[in-house]
Image (cartoon, rainbow, N blue to C red; front, top):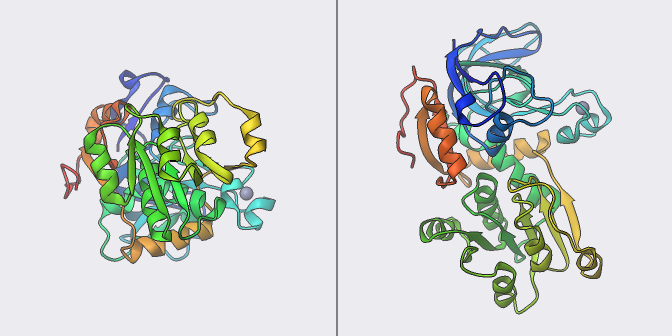
Length: 351
Ligand SMILES: [Zn+2]
């Protein structure tokens, strides 16, 4: 089969497209013929080099497709079923899994980081990580939402317990998690302030439901937030940017507010001011992926049509370098997708 892979870490030059052994499903596992896969920042980190990535590796966490073969003791799936991938892998044995907190699992892994992922013609994964694609959803739409929407869902609903009428600041509206967070916050009935750069991305953020969009290249974000909230600050900040935005988050949050973080795309070591944290009595909440229960809830909301991931562009798998480059340059608004070269995509130019 064909796959995108790298034998060593580095920039786009390490990405190869070529032959890769077709994986066999073990007990409890299913092989999926991939119809669409989606890029995440995680794939850049995995390519660049983070600890514990086995080499060579096939990146790709998000995907959808058709069941191709089932290993022993798999119930509920048959070849031909349309399925989407929940990319958080857990052992289903530890104390956290038993408590229903799968993303806190002591052996938690993500598809395409620790095990071969979805940027291939076929991928093998545990049957418990597969879900039927809701009626009316294309393979592209089904591949686009799982990682970023479950991340944003747990951040806002599971961790920050966002309530109707509260105000949320979301950094970097063009990012996948941030874009999902805008939509989920609006669904809850919260007021959204988003930051981004450039008029085009600002217009898209407004379209998605942001009431105020601050161009961080032109304005001081925390000052603009204070002006928009009668100097009070926001109830919740969604920060997946890290180093570049952290102090802005701490300054922008109201007294007693919550900052929820799921990542650090600009770097993991921000400047910090502990005085603001204790004086304002800020809660700092970490979040990673989502629990099985949260994912099922999200899936039913997506299935009902209340949430839908935006698709930026679709590339054939053989053009993975171009897709990675687009994400690295930050030109996208919405998800960048890859489809196997043998599959014809409905949306060559996104939606
Ligand atoms: Zn576990």
